[in-house]
Amino acid sequence: MKVTVAVLSKEGKSVIEPVLDVLKSVDVGQPLNFGLMTSKKGNFDKNLALLSKQSTDTAVAAGFATTQSKTAAGYDFLPLGDASVLFEGQIYAPIPKAGYLTQIGQSAKQGEASLQTLLGEAEGDYAFWMLKEGTIMAGRDVMGIQPLYFGENRDIVAYATSRAALWKLGIEEPKSFAPGTLGFADKTGFSFRPIKIPSYVEPKQITLEEAAQTLQTLLVESVRRRVADLEKEVAVAFSGGLDSSLLAYLAAKEGKRVSLLHVSLENQPETEEAIDAAQALDLPMQIELFKDTDVEAALPSVVTLIEEPDPIKAAIGVSFYWVAEQAVQSKFKVVLAGQGADELFGGYQRYVNQACKDGTESTRKTMYQDVVSMHENNLERDRKLMGFYDVELRCPFASYAIAEFALGLPLECKLEPNEDTLRKLVLRRAAQNLGLPAIIADKPKKAVQYSTGINDAVKRIAKNSEKPVDQYITELFLRSKNRCI
Image (tube, rainbow, N blue to C red; front, side, top):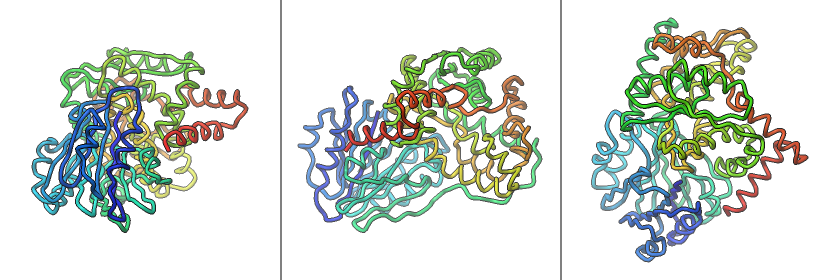
C-alpha cells in the first residue's frame, strides 16, 4: 500500500500540515515508511512525528506513505538545487530507470527538459513530481497505468495517487490526470502540455497475416521487458482465455517460472475451462473458489479501493482483489494481467454490434476512445486493488508501441461485422503463429464479471438487502468516502 501527494498553497502559506494530515490518515494496520519533500530537500523516516520536526514551513511540498521500503515501493528523490524531483514507479525500456534519472540535471530548467524527454521515451508504469517554489510539475506514464489525480479548492492545488488523499485535503471532485502529459500547477490552477498520447489514424493497408507477424514481435518484446527484472518467478491473473494464456505462454518462453492464479465463484464453467487451458500450457495453477458471502465480505474493501460507486467496476474489482490476496499468500510480488487487449483488438461484443449497425469508421472511433480512456475505465482500478497488497500489476498489452500499432489496423483485422465473429482476430492469429494451443487461441471471449459469476452474485446480494444494485454500491462508496474525509 502506498499513497503519494503533492500540494501547493495559492496564498503562499505552509502546506506541511496538510501533507502530514494525508500521511497520518493512511492506516492499514502495518508499519509505514514516510517521505516528506520540499523544493530544497527530502527527509525519510518510519516515525512521522520525527519527520514533521525535521520539516520547515514551505508553500510547496510532497509526501508519501508506504508499507514497503522506499526502494521497493519504486520511489526516487533527486535534489536539483533550485528544485527537487520525486519519481514513483518502474521503467522497462529503452533505458533503465537509473539511466533516465541520472540525466535529470542540476536545475529546474534542466529537470523539466529531462522529464519531458523521459515521458516521451520511457516505457513504464510511473508518475513524477518536480517541486519548485511556486510550482509543481507532474507527469504520468503514457498509458496511465500508474494512478494519478489532481484537483484544487480555494486554498490549494494538489496531485495525488488516490482520490481519497485529495478528499482529505478538501478537494471534492478530483480528476484523473491525462496519461503522457505534463501538468503545471501554480496559484492560478493547472495547465497541461500533452507529450505523447495515442492518435486516431486512418487504417493502414495490411493483411491479417502481416499484422499478426508484427504483433507477435511487439508482444514478445513487451512481455520480455516486463519480466526481465524478475529473478525467477512471475504470476499471471488467469481466466483460461486468450489474453492471460498468451501472457503466461510468453513469460514461460522467457525462462520464468510461471504460476497461474485463478479465482471464481464455485460451480462456474470457467474454472473447468481454465483447468483445461492450464493443462494445455503445462503450467501450474492455483485455484481459489468463493461463495456469495465472500463477495459480500469483499465488496466494502473493493469499493473503498476503487474509489467509485460503479457496480460493474466493483464486480470486476472483486476478482482482482482476490487475485491480489492469492498472490500475497504465495509471496508473488508481480502479477501479469491481460488488461487492454479487449480495447485494442476488439474483444467486446458491443464492437461487433456497433459495426453491424453503424459501420467500420464509427466502430474504430469508439475503440480509439476506449483505448485513450482505459486508464480511467480499467487500469487505475486494478492497479489500486493490487497495490493495496503491495503486489505490482504489470500489463504487457498496455504498451504504447502495441497501442499505436493496434489503432492503425483496419477493423477487419480485429473482427468481422457479423454476430458469429470470434473477435480479436489478429491476436488469435498471432497466438496461433507463436504456438499457443488451439483450445485456447480459438476460445470465445467472456467478460470477467460474468464468466466468474461475480456480477450475478452482486445482484443477489443487493436484492437480499432489498436495494437496487446501484444504490447498494453507492451506499458502500459513501460510507468509505465519509471515513476518508
